[in-house]
View 1 (tube, rainbow, N blue to C red):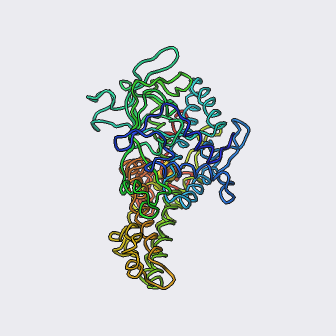
View 2 (cartoon, protein in one colour):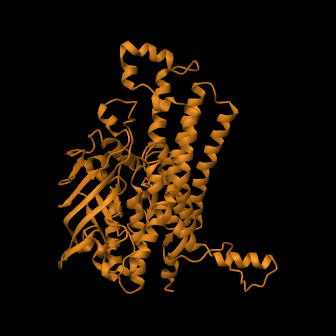
View 3 (cartoon, protein in one colour):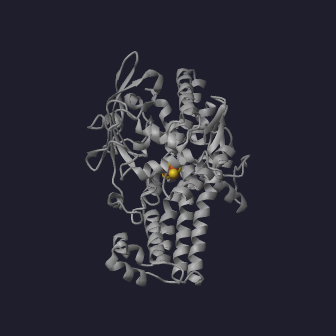
Amino acid sequence: MTIRTGEQYLDSIKSRSKVEIYVMGKEVKDVTTHPFLKPSVMAFKATYDAAWEEDTKDLARAWSPFINDEVNRFNHIHRSPDDLAAKVKLLRKLSHKTGACFQRCVGWDSLNTLWIMTNLMAQKGKTEYKDRFVEYLKYVQKNDLALAGAMTDVKGVRTLKPHQQPNKNAYVRIEEVTKDGIYVSGAKANITGVAATEEMVVLPTRAMGPEDKDYAVAFSVPTDSEGIKIIVGRQLNDARRLEGGDIDALPYFYNHEGLVIFDHVFVPMERVFLMGEYEYTSQLVEIFSAYHRQGYGGCKAGLGDVIIGASQNLAKQIGVEKASHVQEKLTEMIFLTETMYSAGIAASLNAVKLCDNCWWVNPMHANVTKHLVARFPAQISQLSIDIAGGIIGTAPSEWDLKNPKLKEYIAKYLQGVEGFTAEDRLRMVRLLENVSLGVAFQIESVHGAGSPAAQRIMFTRLYDLNYAEEIAKRLAGKKTDLKFKQGAEPWRESETEKFAKGS
Ligand code: SF4
């Protein structure tokens, strides 16, 4: 059972018991057949299929010393820089297979964050959290569970700390502690893929102070726990999935995000990994954010490849693929895509070891990766729209193409170069529209793993401006106290690295 097939994952998702999921105000009974959620479940399933398919299985499997067996990489604890690079490569590859966000990485990054954090806490004498976490990890790996990572709180008034909020549940908080566990209430927003998961790993979303003790909480719960409600958010073109066609909505793969309500949910003590230790929250957030920012270098580059391919095909369909301006645009799209990927690989290979077998991404490169991703997808999409032409916003529907009275006209007037049909054109236009303008490539690229301002804060924290100034002063012949650092980069150590060293 350690590495499940996609079909085993589907069977398990169907057998969840009390799971309460809503789409457009109505409760969903089976996410695997609901037209709105099925594409999302299929994208999640692709992460399971990857462990069995010839072209991906080497990337998608890894050896776990925790259970002394092979596991699906999505539940693996990174043990080297190469492991981190394999993550980025796997994500690029899976984007080729889904054309969507496949949603399983947030849970994966949450596991790796808790591994490091519980190790750092154990170094400071709090050993119970690491023991609990390792037991949980073994359970997840042995059963190859589908996890969501739930971090972003709804946050209420952004200028107020958790304990100052008029809504005392604006951040998920511990309401009650018993000898067996804790009860939590609140809500987590924008939770990727949550309706398609078996368990949620819940982490705090910001650094907290002593008065926010009740909000400094990390735990895991089954998605079908009593008191959890999932309200699935809307997306561009989502109602097309309810139409039942096979062109306009690309009903094969999609992602979804959900608002997750915790209404006095019980969490047994063995699943609690942080309970009031606010002094660890800052590092926890920094570790998680950098992990997820690194991953974007893989999945968004993979979506870039899909868009480049669709653009080239559309250019061929209308006979302009050799035009110099089209070649120039495709070249620019390649450059933007490979830049995002290069940054993700650099964040992996220049990884930082925070404790024994704790490999964290390079925080500067990871933040650069995400900042590039916040900018470049919009540029890639714009170039692809330029190549595709206005038809991307005006094409007839698949229902027009399927109407016997219109079919002939559409076949005649949508055709360009001989050998391509109107259906070829419509399919490629719809792919480009759905991928390049969808939530995964546009909105997620900006706000997922932290909005652009969060990365800019990290740049100024990590880059040693004064050191760079002293370098310049020396070369300009000015008096300077410059002492060259050991490394090539004018960087400071991150707070997390200092914390790990106990400095
Ligand atoms: Fe994974 Fe990318 Fe989706 Fe995040 S945005 S869950 S890294 S596919």
